[in-house]
Length: 264
Image (cartoon, rainbow, N blue to C red; front, side, top):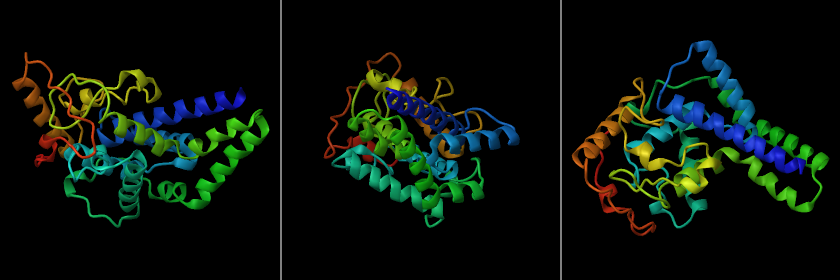
């Protein structure tokens, strides 16, 4: 089962760098790095993601928009507004590409304080680079595969980055339980959290506050700090009260509270 081990190892490594570098560092600035260390992790992230490489800059802007407008029409990937996960992934990809190519006009509060390496982002995002990585994965399958069904894993391996994001944003805002009252549909989905290395604790994450493993860090952008402060105030206000029941996970019912305007 060499192919299964190859796929599993790539899944875990790719998920780690997306969580560690894109999410916790680029988007939330939960910790700091020296310029040299940041460049090292930037390269390692590219090597880990390969054909599905995501620009940390474009990812950070997209993710900050998600926090500011979570589960409203302005959220770039709110599952409540999509009939299925594929349509959500497509819309998210279009928004991401607009940030990547500079054709979008994000709010100033979402900009800055993220890793920037235009050359690597440009090269890593070309079709030539993506096809080269995909071909390399295919050659490994031709070498090691022992059954036809193992080739079904190959298309998933080509797009691991978007797949990880889709699992987190779809499942983390539709299924599971809630520990905290927040004004969005975020949930924790423990049974499958091992697949995303902790990223499916979305309700814990969206509640904000300085504590917690995936909270906004002290160097987080204003948009994220504001979102954290708002949710932390709600948690304090609701202290001692039972957690609110989760809203119905239907794309026609996107949580009335989430539709109200959310301050940064």
